[in-house]
Image (cartoon, rainbow, N blue to C red; front, side, top):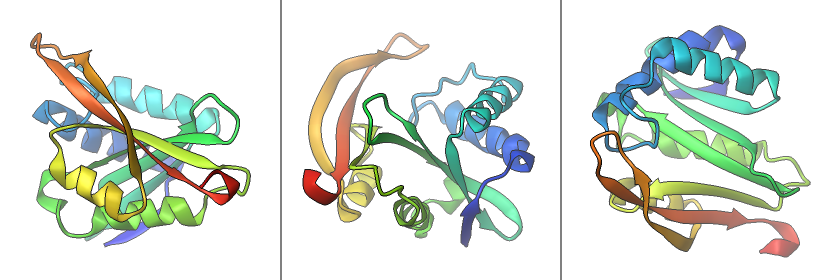
Length: 162
């Protein structure tokens, strides 16, 4: 598996992969009703706004992606990630995170993320790469099926913020 910076040419593959994960209805906030066309358009807007994406490739295809974008406060980025089911647990998530951390701009003092609190594998990965639990958004996300999901707020601090 290899990680590289995503390009606009990757938008379709990124959208199709994220749709697979969204359809699982379990791991990411994107709902199953999202369409590939809608996701591709959303990613295109993110690229135009200067957001940075990395893709995980295996055997010539995109099997995962990670994006970082401004979270609002100066010096803070938000991270989101997905990996196709057959490629989970093989180290790809760590490769994506390491790539994003290696290219962290020097003025970024914090990278934050949210992860569903029952996603033990992802929480463990984030903790093993230096992210710490900051809080819990209890019953914060209403899913299309009416259920409510809680999300851990996690972050990694850098420089004088650490």
